[in-house]
Length: 98
Image 1 (cartoon, helix red, strand yellow):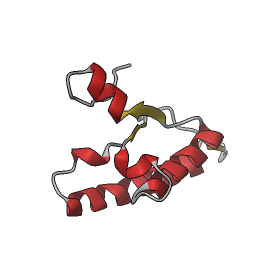
Image 2 (tube, helix red, strand yellow; image 1 turned 90 degrees about the vertical axis):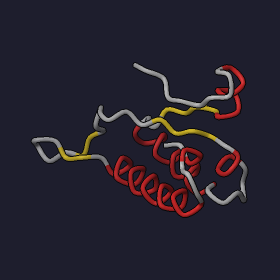
Image 3 (cartoon, rainbow, N blue to C red; image 1 turned 45 degrees about the horizontal axis):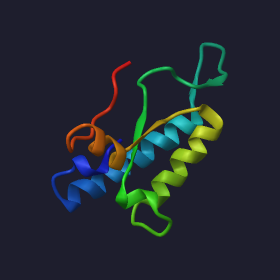
C-alpha cells in the first residue's frame, strides 16, 4: 500500500480509493466456515508511511488513521517508513519478503 508508486495524481487518487476499501474490508474480516468473522492471514498488508499520509492534515492522512484503526482490531497492516527505507536502501522503497 504505497501511494508514491503511482505515476500521476489521478493514479494516486485511484490507488488511495483501493487502499481505503482494502483496509475497510480487512477491518471487517471474513467469515470462516462457522460464520465467525476472522482475520485472514493472506494476503499480507504492508502500509507505507510517507509525506502525503504521515502528517495530520495531509491529503491522505485519513488512510493512516484507517490503517491504525485496522491495526487495533486485526493487527494488520505492517508499516514501513518511506523516509527510512529510502535512506537505507539507496533511494528505493519496497516491501520486505516474509
